[in-house]
Length: 184
Ligand SMILES: *[C@@H]1O[C@H](CO)[C@@H](O)[C@H](O)[C@H]1NC(C)=O
Ligand SMILES: *[C@@H]1O[C@H](CO)[C@@H](O)[C@H](O)[C@H]1NC(C)=O
Ligand SMILES: *[C@@H]1O[C@H](CO)[C@@H](O)[C@H](O)[C@H]1NC(C)=O
Image 1 (cartoon, rainbow, N blue to C red):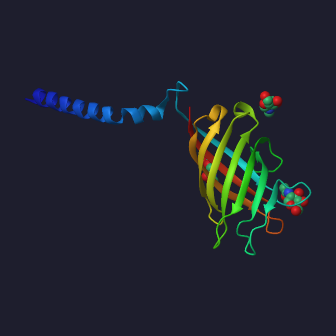
Image 2: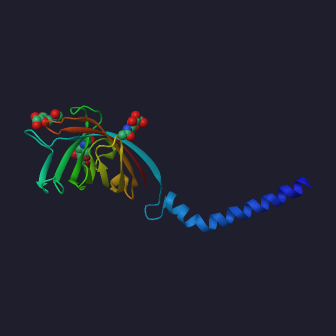
Image 3: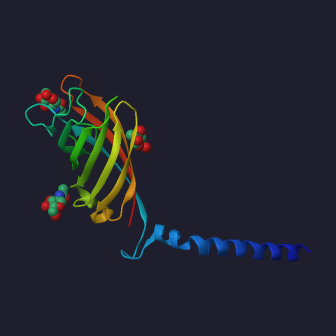
């Protein structure tokens, strides 16, 4: 009796399993194996600090569009240093190249269009592209990573940013970034 039951249960499980597998196997395999790249998916975590310097002798953020009297639309082109540690003089690991605009009329929310171009270690020559809404007054902001190049081909993921330093007078700031990406 017990063995008969467990046998029936086994068949039932097998049926459920094969049905699930058949219906989701295409999606399932696409998510773990890329047929073009012939590679298995992996997940990488990156941690770095982003330094935005809009003022001084050598600014890394330059205003290219003024925006209206409330600064709505103001747009900056950036070539910001990415470093390993929180200090501006810590080891350079890449640059954040792109732009951000003040995209909200009611608070300070930025449209970020940024390529993280890595120049150090195994990621040297690889890049990640981020497009997202950066509500700067929030403690931690999440922005989507929509693609990548080099080691990060077919990347998808998200970035978490947290401002660790902001100078009210000159608007220099440093943000900590944790980036999680799935790539092949
Ligand atoms: C910040 O801003 C000041 C003045 O605008 C500038 O001279 C300084 O070099 C900047 N950089 C850092 C890392 O504070
Ligand atoms: C990164 O790669 C470039 C081009 O291959 C090379 O010139 C440079 O020295 C590398 N940088 C580091 C820090 O390895
Ligand atoms: C990034 O990850 C580190 C280590 O887990 C954590 O201490 C830090 O708070 C994280 N920062 C953000 C902005 O997610």
